[in-house]
Image (cartoon, rainbow, N blue to C red; front, side):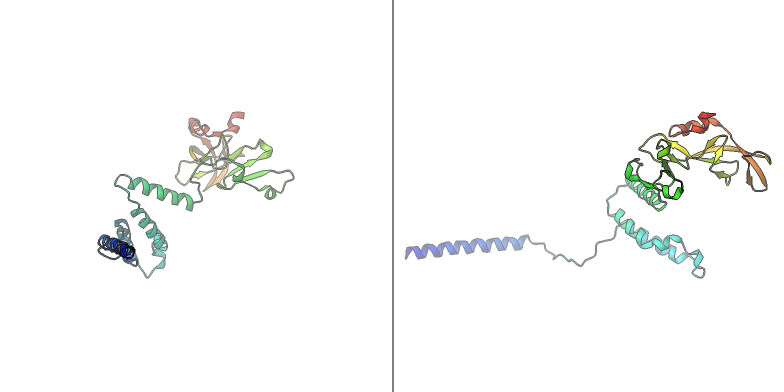
Length: 246
């Protein structure tokens, strides 16, 4: 008999402990149930962006489709990016820096520009020898920047086609090519490398006889480097072979 009573007491204590745990669980529960279908609150950045888009959409002349602001074509994508930015918790100090980094990255990628320096590694190059149509040709083009080439038959040195942009006296007068023995396409000194263009000033003179003259506007002209000291900055990144051979 005493064994039966002992067993009943254990069962009562066990049930009491379970009831107490259940009561504590109810007390510690969240007062309001979680609504899984509830939408998150919009960030201030997203609210601002949506408001500005609404104003922009209402401002343009709907009778002329050519006047439609270009950014409206990318509205959803821009709003998604702004929302991500707004949720990232940027401070007043970091926000301008981060926003600038994002906009710069987007510009580089849309213009097929690189985001990090070229390494010069073998997997960055693609063989375009077949395009040359010459037996024994071994020309490679950089996959990340199509303006960079290397020729294995020419010491394998890499060359950037737009290292120098010649700038004439007028804003519209800019071009690439050879001026005073210096070519726009120059050999890259070393990798890692980030392509950089240098704008070098040149003078323009009317000339109808020089073999290097170019046709421009109302006649033929010859160009000369205005200040050769501007080439010093170019030499920091590139080798100017044509000039050194003179």
